[in-house]
Image (cartoon, rainbow, N blue to C red):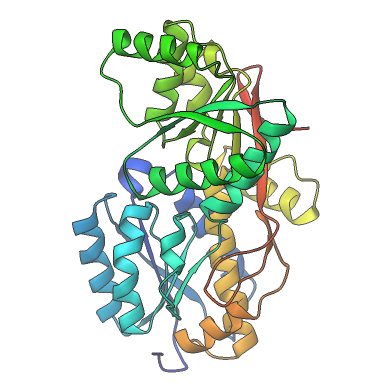
Length: 349
């Protein structure tokens, strides 16, 4: 599916802008501004069509249908939540339109043999493996998993349990719910009897941070570990003192000394007067990846973009080096570990 080789190149962006933007919109818009200010791509400007999927499956399906039916939109950046991205991916695939998700980590997104579905973020397995190895090296041997009963939580929890076992860590309990503080106290008594020494959290914000705060209230003081959905300044604010020392497996480090990262941070803060977050970097890289694929193909159509993305090897983005496999997974060197020190998430050194 393509467009006439003239006029603006149109990209769709589907994201929960109103409820959970996390500065992705700003990262996307900065990348477009830079590209257009430098003459565009294959002599054409990039234009964005943005729609809020409200982190809802039904709304996400409607947004995907509207993008799929629009012949001017050649590719879509989105969606954020795995429970939205996985079902809507079929719509884009059947329409022959590239979907590049900067946030979906659920493995099933790329397990269907689709040709037009990509992610520029590591999947749950990559993130869980790095966190499990780190926890093992810190001496952890018996851990608890607290997870959400959705595609993100279940996928990440399962991946962590598998990699924890490989790293010599036994998972002594898995829970997805506790009723109140008394209930958590009873769980704590059980975990102490099981001689637990850490907790892995497969939840998004703010729920994961609220769990850490609740743990502090009942006296649970073991180290916490989590995935990329808890990479947020709110983790320290909501989690409070009990969150100090929490380690998160995520993407993008503002401490990365590479020139492209320094330049991105400088341009972002100059434009928006605040520091970029991980999703700012992901949105920025998504636009630049699509633009690079179009430039290399010499054409703005989904089939050419998909082919060029699969040929990407160690493409230097601000979130790391991107490489895509045949299934659309980003297998580049992207996972970083961050730890809360002095109330702020910082890259683990």
